[in-house]
Image 1 (cartoon, one colour):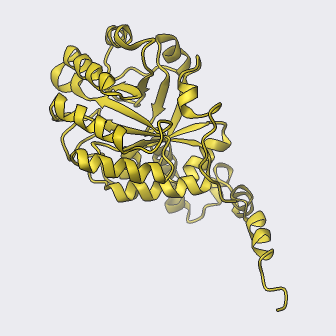
Image 2 (image 1 turned 135 degrees about the horizontal axis):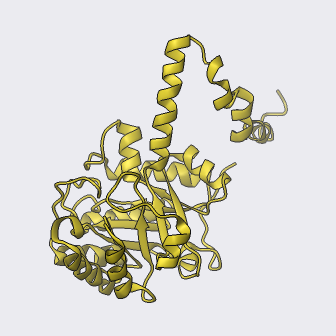
Image 3 (image 1 turned 180 degrees about the vertical axis):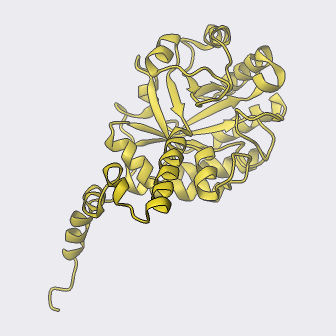
Length: 298
């Protein structure tokens, strides 16, 4: 069944972020993972640039992905699902003009929110060392370009700063404030390292604009559950690479079992069979739909 991208004012991501409940967005990297998240009851997913690099390229998140690869994946997810999609757009893949093109393409392909960060290009994962940043003024220009490029104010622009790792918390707050004043719909201070830093962020933004949290297993920010983050004042939390870490662990065990035993039978209790997977994918319904358009004279 094909899905179309529509925005309802009562249920849009923008509206939910203004509500009392935190929005939890698991990281996904293709249409299947997004549809699994939707089936599990999530109304929002995060199309993670890191997860795309891990799965498409088998490489780390060091700026190797292109806008086209991100956009193609987004389009496949949107064809499959009506779920809200937050898209990791890295640095916008260049200067302000590149940002404008990126926003136009991603919005037309179904993005509900587009995240931009203030690293230089090519960027690297927010929890890796050795990052460098563009100037605050250049990033402000990128945010303004993104806002000018979008067709609808329901398409949210997220302003992310990675300055904690390079310049410290005070400079990070200065940058975040500048991005907020430039018009960013959400603020994302990456790599928060302590509850004191959370208090500083919330002291500046709580009640003024939605603030985003990033939970990375083994990363710089201490892991918290959604309820605790909501109580701190966060409006959105992403778990960008968690699914890939879970999948890699499972797949490694699967291949070890197959190599050792020469059969998948000893892994059957941890996998779907052929019919179960086709039931999930809706194969029967799709084939029946196709039959409606077959040539009845043949």
